[in-house]
Image 1 (tube, helix red, strand yellow):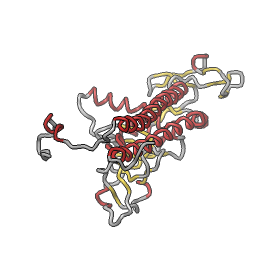
Image 2 (image 1 turned 120 degrees about the horizontal axis):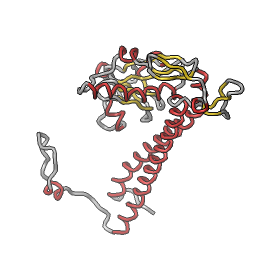
Image 3 (image 1 turned 180 degrees about the vertical axis):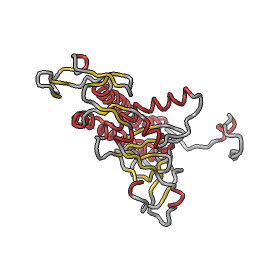
Image 4 (image 1 turned 90 degrees about the vertical axis):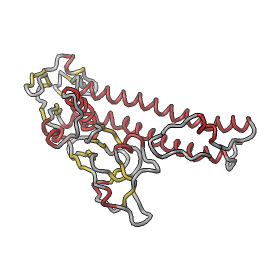
Length: 294
């Protein structure tokens, strides 16, 4: 086989493809059995993705309904929150004009910043923590946030500072070049610099996660208006942000509604990770005959 160039040319032509040699089961019936197994795994992954899309839309709709449209359920007779109550704003709940936000917000609510609702811990310069043995942690960079771990992911030794160790369910915020917020589900890893691990001792996860998600649009709009790429988000940007702060007990009540949805999304993503690994492990073994389909 002709060796592909590792220089400027990075595309394949028809001759390259023709010269690839692969092993195939001789009988068509065996090929169809293999295709059926792999297709069933792909179908399950696709189903989980579609379920997650619906769950994500449901959770976001709940959050927006309560804290963007201000139609959280309210018992007007008792003057307090009630899950069986009427939508607050659309049912005539008292709203007051806020000069900072330039909009009306429910009476008694406050205004704060993204720095007020969460702690933002930056990742490590992982090149300073090279592994010395077989015990390793894979490094989470922006590429891993998008695509998950691969064989090319950087590794570090496991005795890094605890604050930089990421577990499934942690909220990550890439603040340099690519602005993204996500709930991590790729497995235990080490956080690289240019990504914040976002936590809070005061507010529940669903609240600071969706506040960040919503405010990202503002950061990106700022970059678009300047017709340039915003290089990174600083602590000053977070302090200068202005957001609505509902009563904490109300954020906790919504957390009780949204958290099971977010957990279901994470579990489906974990299932897809396992299914993808199983598919990628099975494919070569099925093709070379090491594993047979009954």
